[in-house]
Image (cartoon, rainbow, N blue to C red; front, side, top):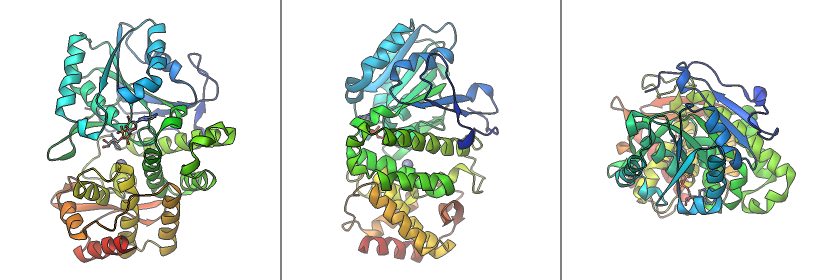
Amino acid sequence: MAGAAHSHVASPAALKRKRRFDLPSEMQEIKILANQKQNSYKIIVGRDILNHSSGLIKENLCYRAKKVAIISNRKVFKLYGNVVEESVKKAGFEACIYLMPDGEKHKNFKTLKKVIEFLSEQRMRRTDAIVAFGGGVVGDLVGFAAAVYLRGISYFQIPTTLLAMIDSSVGGKTGIDTEFGKNLVGAFYQPKGVLVDISVLKTLPLRELTSGFCEAIKQGALAGGELFNLTAHFLKDFPVKNFRQSFSNEEFLRLLEKLIAYQIDFKASIVSQDEAEDVDRRDSRSRKILNFGHTIAHAIEKVTDYKLFKHGEAVGIGILIEAEISKSVANFPEDELQLLSDIIGLAGKLPACHNLDSSKILQAISFDKKNINDGLEWALLEKIGKPVILEGIPQKTLEESIKKFLKR
Ligand SMILES: NC(=O)c1ccc[n+]([C@@H]2O[C@H](COP(=O)([O-])OP(=O)(O)OC[C@H]3O[C@@H](n4cnc5c(N)ncnc54)[C@H](O)[C@@H]3O)[C@@H](O)[C@H]2O)c1
Ligand SMILES: [Zn+2]
């Protein structure tokens, strides 16, 4: 398990552009530095760079590595798998491929067992590597398989959803769901590298884009300043409903790449100095702040049996309800709440909420796994860019804030 990291990543202004292992020059490189060198890694962001996957792998792998297992799902692999596979083979590795079933309901022990059986049958050694190629479901499960197979084998993330690019592939949280809830079994286990090719987003379904942008708005609201403005302006200029057509627009691509790099850099700046989410920390830079919008989101996902909402969509609603709670207990300004609501509107249409039962949501909150030390901690906002961790929110405040939102 990784020790707490204390080195800081490059600030956005210092994002480096480097020409390495024949990568195109227009590429962002973000370093995540941990106090244990083996836990440090880099994230590369660019366009049409899937064919450089093996460069990143080769540079960060033991010289004795022979085999690379690419683990994905049918949908993603059919779209882009051959490029990654060819790149790996061209670099002289033996490639083997496992396609897991698609969807959150497969992020479980059964799939984990199959993946581990596959790695064993392929006689993958500790010097070899795994590539998690897909959205957050693939990334979380494969990362966990990598953490436990042979007590830890190198792995790389190639995230293909917006959510996975800016959130789940950064920070080393890996895991699976159990019948008791989401992400209840897992490990902090850092990849050896992450490659983000923004070009693959052109095939991402609209609801998945909305979901990813809601997480981006969450990170923007926590960071404030430049990241918030960048996210808001991007959505104003390029509303999600026209996303796919915009791929022919050079300015859109340039800004999308910049936005994703800055989003990653923000997440990296938080996780690199609180690598394993220290339960005792409550400061405004602790990893816990990333839970803003999530206590409500998890409750909504639970009461709708994980069927009605994509995770990020539930986060969109969670942001608005938790901003309402913040207004009551942390003086979050009304005009900033309105601003958040407008920007979430630009991220796409969220599923209707009027049928949700506020008492069931309240009940679900009390089961939230983020209950620690018998007290429920909330990541809230004093204002945009100023997160705060609070405990002991009165039940009445919760109830009123939820009801107010559901009545809208
Ligand atoms: N580890 C973390 O820190 C962390 C953080 C946030 C979320 N998560 C986890 O991430 C998961 C959600 O991830 P997600 O939102 O990426 O969902 P997902 O992995 O289910 O992907 C969404 C859908 O998009 C498809 N897809 C992926 N890339 C595509 C592409 N380029 N073109 C077309 N279709 C594509 C997938 O096959 C899937 O059907 C959840 O399990 C959540 O718990 C983890
Ligand atoms: Zn989330």
